Amino acid sequence: MSAPVDGPNRRRTQAERSAAMRTRLLDATVECLVTYGYAGTTTQRVAEVAGVTRGAQVHHFRSKEDLVVAAIEHLAEQRVQAAVREFGRVSEAPDAASLVLDYLWESHQGPVFVATLELWVASRTDAVLAAQIERVEPIVTGALIGALAQMVPDQAAQKNLRDLAFTAMDALRGILLSSFADRDPERARKRWDRVCGQLRDLLADSLSPELRSS
Image 1 (cartoon, rainbow, N blue to C red):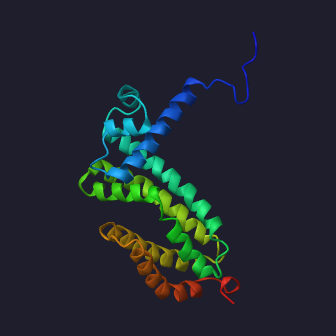
Image 2 (spheres, one colour):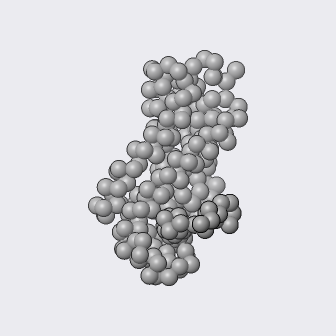
Image 3 (cartoon, rainbow, N blue to C red):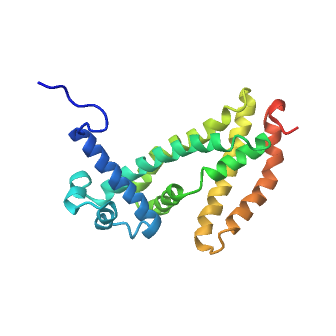
C-alpha cells in the first residue's frame, strides 16, 4: 500500500475539512456583524456570505445562537492574536507612554473590534450572549494588559500601569461606541488624543526610569 501523499497535493482529512468550514462560517459571521449588525445577522445571510449551502451551515451550527456563541470565541482568539501583532508594530513609539496609548488604540481598530462591539450591545438584552462574553472577555483583556505589564519588572509599577491602562481602555471603548452615531471618522481619534494628553504624564510616571522618554 502506498504511503499518504504529503505536501500541497495531500488530501485533507474530514476533520480538517470540517474545521475549515467552521472557520469559513465564523469569518462570514464576523463580516455580517460588521456589515448588517447583530439584528441583521441571520443564519441564511451567513451561509450566503460564506458561499455555502444552508444545509452545510446547519450541519455545523443549528441556530443563530449556536453560531454567535462560537463567533464570540472566534473573535476572542483573533483579538488576542491582533494584540500581540500590534504590540510589536507600535514598539518603535518615541517613548514608553506613547507606546502604551498607541497600542491600545491600534488593538481596538478594525472589523474584529466592530463585530465585538455589536455583540456587547446585543448582550444587554440577551442572557446567553452576556454569559459567553463574560466568560471570554477577561481572557482578551488579560492578554492586552499582560503585554503591557511586561514592560516593567517592578510589581508595584505593574499594578499602576495596569490601573492606568484599564482607565485608558474604558475611555477608548466609550469613545468608539459613541462614534457609531457620529459621521465624522476623525472625531473619535481627536477625542482619544485628548484623553492621551491627560494620561501620558501619568503613564510616564508609572514606568520605570529607564523606559521614560529622555
